[in-house]
Image 1 (cartoon, rainbow, N blue to C red):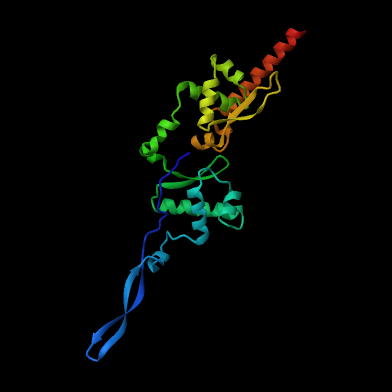
Image 2: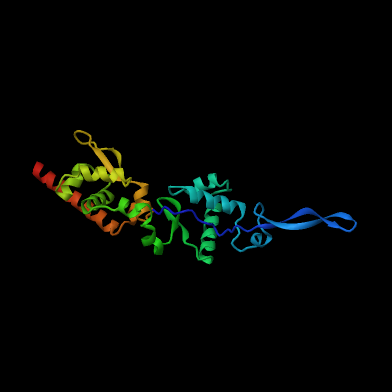
Length: 242
């Protein structure tokens, strides 16, 4: 997830010449004629012919992505930009990315958290981290990162599940993750007391550049290992019961 400062979308403050009627004094009296002045109300002819000019649909889509604080689905973008369908929205996103690449822009539209978001290039991360103390706000301690990793790979899971893996109390770490918007309550377990089940959020996916938790490093291997461990525990319990 990258919050960006106000930007220019390849547009300029180009002005156009507007005809003004003025008068000048001659030997035979006053004569009216035209002069030209610069005005910013209407785009210039040069800008209108620019290879970076936006069509109305393209401009609406770009504006929607710019003001959104979360990733937007194709369906949502279609509604906000009044487009024909999701296919047109996808096509316009590709056009915008081509314009950004051609103009060496600092921005690019990426697919994150089952939607699309306007982000800054990775090369600008260190510089942008100094703005609004963003790095300090999103920085996680080692215990918090461990807790978030367990929730991400084992979700949905209870606090007891997290504590069983970490070996220490996890209530405070889970609370911090929820305050940062990285973890949330996704339901209740069926066990005694019906403890809360925790999972990650869309902000978590956006922050780590993911569209789904299956894209986590070694996700498939860890899921397979978890299933094998669960099967072994079930077999052990059956043997003990017998």
